[in-house]
Image (cartoon, rainbow, N blue to C red; front, side, top):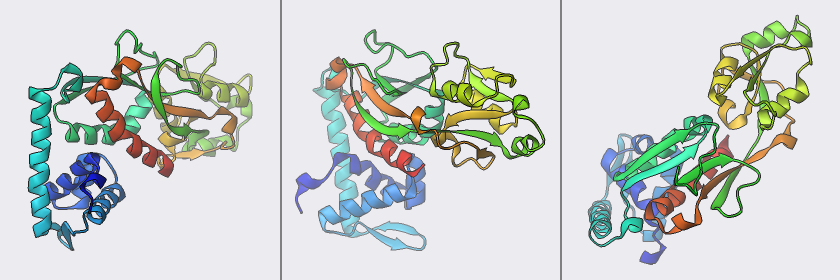
Length: 293
């Protein structure tokens, strides 16, 4: 086994299973799904060439090697934290506030991943700001932006995490009423956007009858809740709706309106340990989550 093969980001997964005794409890603690924890544990064991846990019906029990790993991993984590506290400059400290700007729907979808990051880095104080306004990273209104866009600012650094696709949805009850009604009476739900620049509003503009009634909201989650409650038809990102049993898709062939999900930061923040840790932790987990949606 080559110790250099170990990834520091795997350590919290092993520690969580050591502390909780099960994959399901560890996945809840880390904010990821069961299979992610399983793969991380299997990967660490493969790299080390040892078995860290006995897989019993009652849960995961540490082997002798697992107990040694747990002890050394705790010491390693404490040592790294001590280095950051005692020797690190402001940018190298894994502590203090980290401000993320994103949308309400992304926060709702990714909240478990954010919780997992908070567990892995308890001294970092997450501040999640949501809203339609794009906060200015240059003016330090936020440290990191997690945003849907096809054209991220060229002067920012970042990673494309996923494609975002859309469909139109309505509740089952509302769809039943549509069968006996005319298209001009179908109620559509949209965001407040006078220029119709958002993908959702472009879809509504294309599909709704010119005389159809409209209900609007300044919140994407508000539009989502209107749809769930049976107000009408909404164009929404599929990541938000595909697993919702209360919504049924109507139009799905809307790839011309696809956009992308980007994780972005100002170039000056590349040396920030907090920003780097957040990028490295959430990138594989968000990509995995969106691949499953």
